[in-house]
Length: 393
Image 1: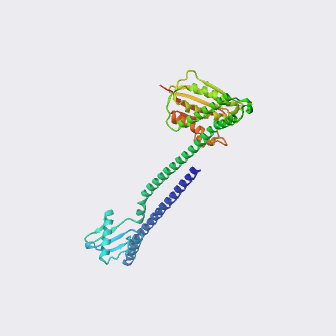
Image 2: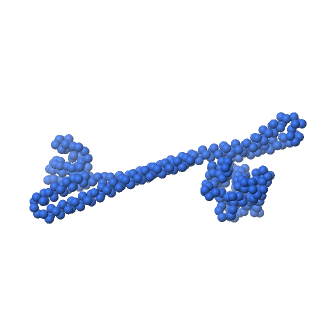
Image 3: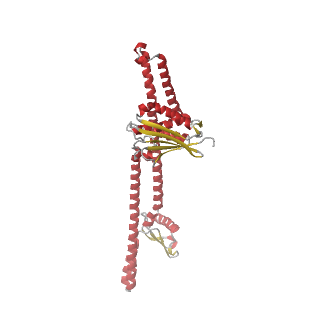
């Protein structure tokens, strides 16, 4: 939601700047066209004065020429002997040339004009000093406007990136907190249930459960709690990497899932095919087990309680990599979220939080230096491919 709002703000500001820039340049183009028309009229007046040799017509033409030149907006200052200002037009300030202060200010302005353009005429008699027309003054701002627009766009882009990163970080932490609560909830609920059983007299306990059995179940729940605590402790820092047997991790995961298929995915069939003599990988066993468990549980959810298959395959296709693929025969990933499948908050489940695959990508790519991706062209269902580095090459 926040990302979409910022995108609209940036787009709106960009359109406003672009519209203003186009209007500004259009005004300059219009002014240049008027100058072309003015110079055309000046040429026409010169031609008329040359064609008519009577003095009256020549004077009229000269007067009209002077009016057209003054109307062009070009700053003009005429000086005589001793740099005395005789006449001026289109200067950017009000001044009285009959006063000493007025003459001093005009001479200062003349020096500014001469620093840009050389005067015309004989300095001992009269000189004509001139400046840039208004259109040139406007054109000088074009590079600054372009640079300003680029800087503004860059700053807005950086601001949007920072806001998006902050929003993604907050969403990730919120999702992590929900995932932690979810994983802690099952063993805690179980412990609470066993505590209620312990409070009952032995002859009133369901199924005649005895204390040793209760202690064993409580011990298993405590192991689950310790495993959850250990996982979140490791995901929050740089965990140690050692040589790990991927075959051992997958086989342990197979036993864990097989025992829970009747509850998690009734009718599902789990198939595991591992190449013989798979080399050890460089990784963290606790986090790697968690990552693969998330992918397999997502595959079970994709079957939605229907009969189907989940296959886990691993082989060494390159000297430095082991390729592991987890494939299900479910309904597949909707096209709308395929590119964002591993981002926090993205999920295909109605009540999901979009944490599992985001954590898996962090573990595979951030911790193990591998790669996880969604494969296309593998038929129906979903195929997740994981690349993990071989240890001790």
